[in-house]
Image 1 (cartoon, rainbow, N blue to C red):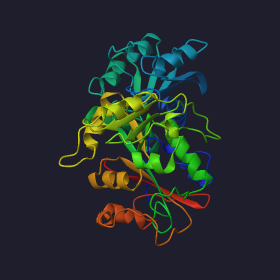
Image 2: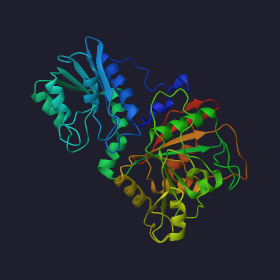
Image 3: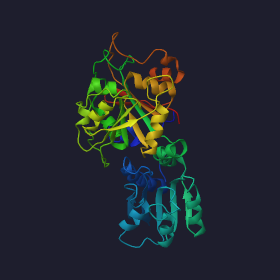
Image 4: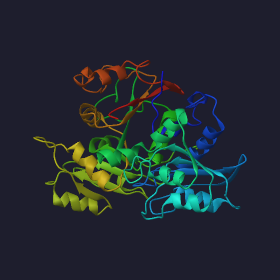
Length: 399
């Protein structure tokens, strides 16, 4: 069965020997592109509104230079790779995960640099979906006499998946929404209402922290903050070879009901945004702003007192938030599933049952064929993997 390739598939690395994404034999071009993809992933969580990109320059089987795009406004991957090269790169092959840009933005066009440096061949992982580029960079290189090849196969799928959040922002004006949910073997998310419940083990927890590290933001509802009192920061990233910064924390609190004394407001090196209805209490707003939170008004869903998710995600995209990890409680999971406004689901299943008093998603929601199939476990639309005693599948949502 074909596995779903997530933009964040690299969070699987090193946690289990069976988690290798691709076991097939690779060509030389694919091997070098794989190295460029590893570099590109170093930019996840840093580059928005730009996509993460990696570049490796090779001649006669030897790396001359390599680099990746580190942050918006900083040099692109091709520039970093050329600067990294100790010697001239004339006649070499450049492996770039994304089509080189051909327009003037905050930095000059990368096609001009590759032509100037007399690169002989450019191998690309995927074409840039940005209408300002979208093949124009490849055409410019070919017009200058440079041999250009766009790869296919599994490596190309990885390259395309890596920039999925960038594509989502361009075409749908919303972030890429990754939802993470942990359920017991009997499909519950808590032992009792209002009780914090550990469902999965250390390996799954480490993977969630990697997901946080790779995302622009982590989003939860106010009930999760009240019940679990989480820090929502990145802590457990053992055996993780990628740089990260603490993601933005986003809390959905329509009535601004939180006190400001919750732990999420006390952690350093991380911003907190609290999204609320426009008519929420100004006094409560000042209370949260006094502990460093930024309050962001979001329109209500029609005829309700709930935040409109489409308005929320549009507001985040306008603020250059391109990837959001949602760690929902019952209500937020049900809302996202009903409206099908998420892009993928990391579905963790713990080994133990929680029993008859446990909290599970609404039974009406389970009539949705897609959601019902998720709860039936192995064999539907995904490869199930074992993380210690836990099981994990990654399902596509609205893509």
